[in-house]
Image 1 (cartoon, rainbow, N blue to C red):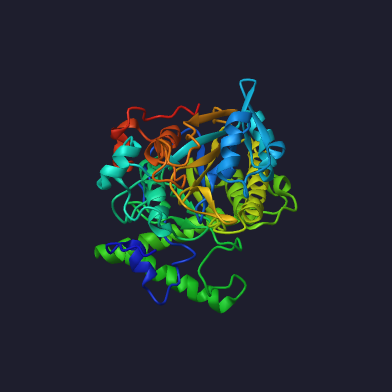
Image 2 (image 1 turned 60 degrees about the vertical axis):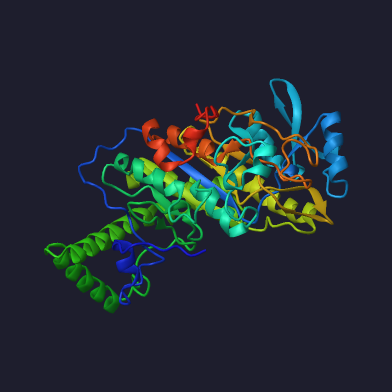
Length: 454
């Protein structure tokens, strides 16, 4: 997916052949050094499931009548009723998790996890009849991976957005960091989610190393060049040319942010490391890095941070039970370890992790897999979550039924990404008056806060 931007400090630096900053220090949004810092710490951690996660095999009816509907609609890929991980809500078990998500049962039972049902990009409450008769209310290129990834990350349903709601949230809370690190931190990829109006996110490299590419810490010649470069940029920062001064400020902020994060991100034998133990999957390693940065929040002085992590493999057109099962095992173990780390470092009530995906998948199977669909279920974890609950409305499991776009079991979302994101953003510190500027469809919904955050 391509993203075009007007000329900015980040674009200037990325285009400088002498400075390979693009993937190591791509910009800390510049903030006033006199901004008033918040007196608490909060973090949001997005876990994006690329490919379109089949929520129908994530949250499954446990009671006989509803389970029979589910099994009848997808007999060859249904999870056996006896294998479901029961979720007790108020002493009743209506739903169960996929057995490969079993590590999350303890998090749910501890009231630190909730499930949001049938959420997706939607402009307003939409019935089946309205969907079929009013094409302008459908997201553009519905059921397309690239388009719906962009829509889930931006909450914009009718355009190819260049800014994500995570980045716009970061813009609104940047001043709470009191002139320190910018809040947006990317651990994987470079998609639209963390792109804001004030600046691009800072990337945390996968190897944990920070600094300029090609400048070795133990090489005297490299360090001499680096010192000369710093002097040149310092001179540029004191000039009157706005572009040169802006680029110089960006360079210095990048270096300072890099140095502030380096110590905490590369520290060994931390409590976060202990929580993850020998878990060595792709998502676990991303969340381990996030946990270590959060563990070092006192050293970095950060007050608000929003992270983007991701994993792929959810485009399950075939062999879904095994393929999605492997993905869920990685997801469940990584989120459980992350929850353990947050409890260990005393940040349990300060950090909220949540899932997003392109879209859901059809209830009707296509052989051993499923096709692209729309609404799906999301997982939210953290000590501030009003957990051991499900939120939203579970779809009617009927092909061609009231929640189906057609006859394949493509659920029309009953909760919007706007409502989902706005609930998280308000807990994070965004003022209610600022939410419609971030979530453009929010005012089309009567309920603007879904109530799953304390």
